[in-house]
Amino acid sequence: MTDASAGIPPFEFRQTLGRFASGVTVITAAAGQERRGMTASAFVSVSMEPPLILVCVDKSAHMHALLSDPEVSRFGVNVLSSVQRPLSDHFAGRPAPEDQVPWFEHEGLPLLSGAVAQLVCRKEQVIPAGDHTLFLGFVEYSRYTDDDPLLYFRGQYHELG
Image (cartoon, rainbow, N blue to C red; front, side, top):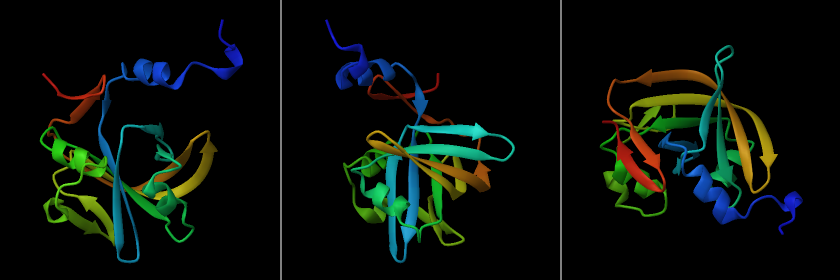
């Protein structure tokens, strides 16, 4: 018999939550000349008024240190298109050459060209949550296309249709 207060084991938790299909995002931020991105599926809208979103970042991730920096007040969310799987892999730790990343800037914040949508967010609140931190963002700017998104389900990429 397992101890219910310990919760389910991490492997079981990951396998169970892998049954939730999600879009794939790359979170982007910059500090000085350093620009960084991180693939994340833990992204959710929180509120329409005011426009708020939430991203969850593992405390061991390089992006966590960057977003935790008090000098970093904004971050981007790039919803990847169905043809951007290589970018998801790049920012998930399987990097391709940096010159293949289609960076562009919006008011000094790095974003990714070709994404289905981009959001520019002001860091509103930082909430510790177990081995992750929740970054609540106020959406200051957005743009989007009608392209198909890249999806993630049971540990694999998928496309609509």
